[in-house]
Length: 215
Image (cartoon, rainbow, N blue to C red):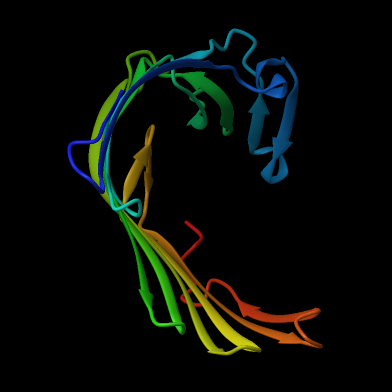
């Protein structure tokens, strides 16, 4: 449903539902080994598809500033996770179905332009996540956490032949099943040169400058 209460203002309400199926290799009975045999990667033949329901409200101002609110509920959410076996020294990696996964979120997006030399787009997310599995081996869990994410993409035009792109991402601590995922981020800087009347583009770039994108 779409509503335009005034010129330059738009509200959109959507309700969606779909079903997600695991990849073929995740539901086979094949087994692989990692870490010198201390890790076993096993398929799960009985893995069930996930049923995803989401309601979302989006507010758009002047066709560029965006505010979004949503709530998502996923029955039989599946993900690959690991479990330390009790009978032998092995980490068992396999896809499992949780009871459900829920997420509520707020997203703000804004583009900024300063003359011809700076273009920036920034987005920020406030997220509440909950995951529950009542039969995860001998470790049932019901976990929830609030986290924050931010993403900034900027282009600085130094001249018609030279520009600099800066992309930055940051996220606070979150959960995935029994895993505690620490805060992470990434900073990438790219120098772009255009030569031969824009027919040749040369790029020099550096990624993960703060060494924070691996968890």
